[in-house]
Every structure is written in structure tokens, then in C-alpha cells.
Image 1 (cartoon, helix red, strand yellow):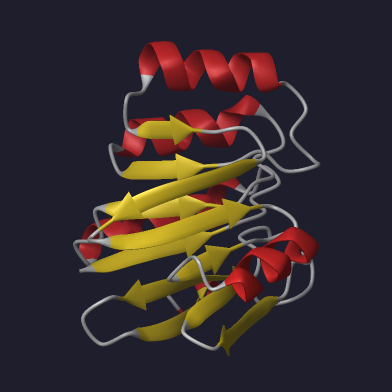
Image 2: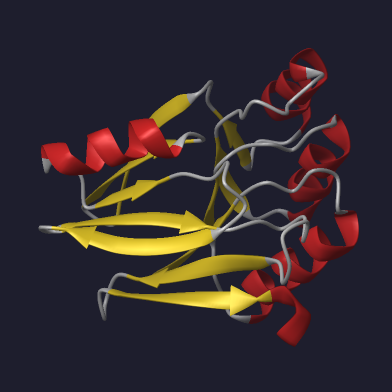
Length: 166
């Protein structure tokens, strides 16, 4: 099983649509979004995609009320949490937050198989003992080539995908 991991959309709908299309084309049924939709528009695009997406809020999410309304009343595939989430999937324990400082601390506990974060707009992948700590970079493209990550549970491997290369 493969999962998609992405963060920091900041309303770049074009790059978001490319990301979601990649997930659909590659049969990735579960994705993890590490925060910073910014406006409710990306939440609606993700909701319309039908892809199961576990989400946390970031520091740049303005209209949380509308985003929550979309998740809880309109799009059941949008699994919205607040700033932190623990999800069990495929017998793996996944922690997710927007902030790398907290993610680093969570990864060091050894309690999780994967710890996911965003915020820096730069992709970073490291292993801390048995735990993968993954920042997928940014969908936005502010710091260069936008990116997201695909994690393969079967191979226990990480692939950083550059959106401009799609």
C-alpha cells in the first residue's frame, strides 16, 4: 500500500490538481495533508476529488469555520483534525502535525512508524531509529519546485515527487 503526503497548498489550485491527479493515476487511496490550505477553496477541491485525505490545520489556515463545515457536512473523504492527529492505517501508526519542531519530538519517542509535518516549504526525509520523519515540501511552489511524497509501506520507502516534472 502506498500513501500520498503533501503540505502547504497556500491556494495554489493548479499544483493541487496535479498532485491529486497523480494520486488518482497511481491508485493512491489514502493521503495525508499537513496543513496550510489557506482558504477553504483547496479543501473543496480535495473534497471533490473523492480521495480519502487526513488533514491537520497549519498556521496559514484562515477560515477554519468554513473548512470544518466542508469536512463535517459535505465531504466525508476529508478527515479533518485540529493541529495534531494520530491515524492508524495498514497496521501502522502515523502522527501528523504542521510544525517540524513537534514532529521531530514525536519521531524521537519511537511510538510511531511515520511522523509527518510541513511548514518549512522544503522537503526533508529522515529516519530516526525505526521512525520515518517526513516533510513533503510544498504544493505552493514558493521556494522553488513544488513537491509531495509517496510512501510505500510494502517497500518501506519514500519518493519525493516534483510537481513541475509531472
